[in-house]
Image (tube, rainbow, N blue to C red; front, top):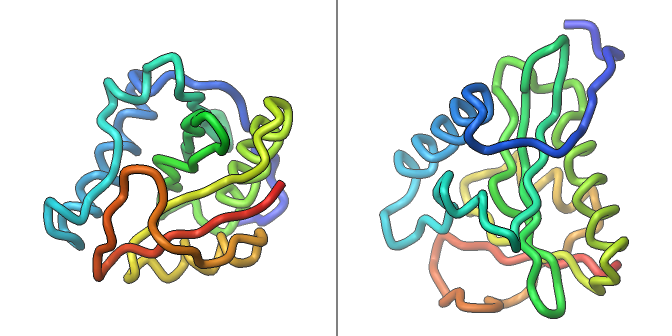
Length: 154
């Protein structure tokens, strides 16, 4: 895989067949790794709500990744971050995070927050590299042995 191909981040539709395939793959992975009560992913329908901004990453003309920004009163929450395993290595996740951060800043949100699983090592590494630090549970989340909560001031 050439590492310098152009990745295009744009507003997307979670119901687009390629986006849906990525979301279903993400949901299947989370279901395989974590108990039902430890899964906090949003359904495809929930990703179409007005308080959710959904983005896709295109690489070579197809959707290779997705991420969402849930708009909360005083922060933005990173949701549904997933990159096609076959397309990893092109900085898609980093570019999606950059877009979410840009969108949050444009709405004057002071923080980005997220919940991720303890076994998602690559995701945690990406978030840490982007300036996220571990915090306690936030919003409606309850403490859970497999959840890691992170925050980045903007």
